[in-house]
Image (cartoon, rainbow over all chains, first blue to last red; front, side):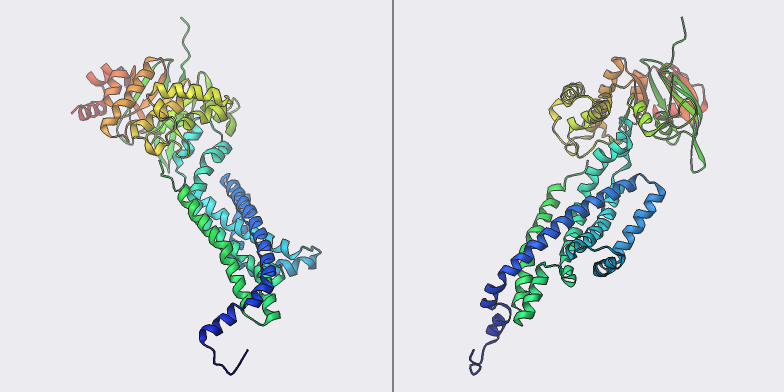
Length: 233
Length: 254
């Protein structure tokens, strides 16, 4: 590069964030990171939402002792920053003889965090189903569990799609926190490449990878919201 | 002739909310094929009494017997389990003021849900019977509609079909027409008239005087949680004995 020729700001910008040779060199690594991010994201969303729903359903039985446990679990996990929990689990569990890979730790922590938030959202949904819906079901002879499963939960889930989608996206993006414990997801690949190359280009590639990954999910969320925004009887 | 066992017997039912007794020691016998109309001013405890009959509200004292069998408690006074109570409730259909149709189900699904999941009827059989019931209430064309698209009167007729789908021995109506626009009341009352004529045993809590007068075999007048007076429509409307009943009849026939 010829230092005698003054370069325009635009060239400096492109040179910093979009160097073609680095894009060529590191796109493979970023793609690998995307695969890992997608794997964790899918596992977290499936397990977190399922666990959250199960906890909310258990809570509906209103067994005092069990509900105290659920409430404490949910409140603690909602209060803790996920990063703190990730570090605590990753560096703490080996000291008591439990060794999990960084991938498993990230999956486990984010699943529990999503489950906690999802439980609260599902629970609010269950409570917002009108009492008359329960009574109509019970009067036809449906038992408590049948009423919960067939009548209440389907309505509660539809009502909670919007907050649930937002929360799910927010927590899934936290897969980036995995970089601090060395999970080779997008951000980890990008920062590694950045320290090798000394350029911000890999970070920009990482950012674009997140956008490519999450814009469709945000759009899907919006579609689900309109799909389930059915009129209440 | 041996004394007939009442289909429904209410024996000394009391129920309080927050220390206020809403139903006080009410007893009532309803025989097969009878239509009973429970009248009375707002807050007289009629709806609570009805809800105590199928234990949607647990009575504080007293018992309900369905065809001679105790409801809600077992022989040894223990509360029935959720499952046992549910099984008794299948024999008592209930229709609510606010319809309470399940909005995530179509009309037909509303009607077949309980027969399939409670009685274990096959889906095909339940559909055949469900369609027949919808025809009876004049809504066979709406089988695939969702509740939000129906008028109040149509919703209530679906709710009646849903209750009938369990082939109950008694039908309980809790102010079935109170939430309806006046022009929609007729279609629901017509279905109730038909049901009465088919021999169904019915307990109707309602402000619908015309129905009480024309369809009830017996009128029960409640006030402040107790039954003040019981009699044929003729007796209650033409010659009410109690002052409160006289006032009520005068008020509503104005």
